[in-house]
Image (cartoon, rainbow, N blue to C red; front, side, top):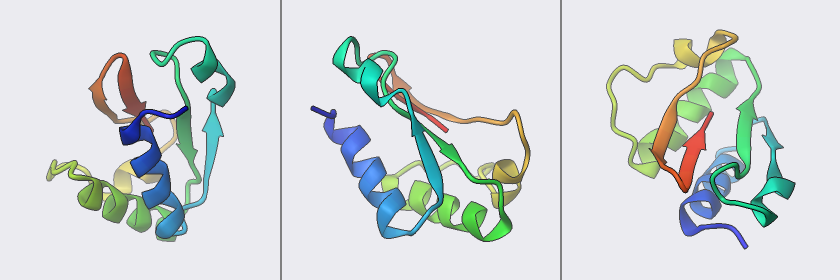
Amino acid sequence: HLPPDFKEFLQLLNSHQVEYLLIGAMQLVITVIHGPQPWIAIAPENAEKVVKVLQTFGFGVDEVTPDLFLKEEQSIRMGLPPVRIEI
């Protein structure tokens, strides 16, 4: 059972056709704190889609640009444990 925020975010990734890999889904059974986290494919078109998803999701930070998702070792966090999304 996914928390509503996780479910909504994954639905937005799918509806915007973002290429991603979901990591940690099995951990959700044990604890939501270490729940599923999407890894986003590094590609310019995909980065644009992710920014649109974040805007639709309500993550209104002006510093979030497609360039952020074109670099390895970069991530953003939304929410607080036990329901935190990190991409």
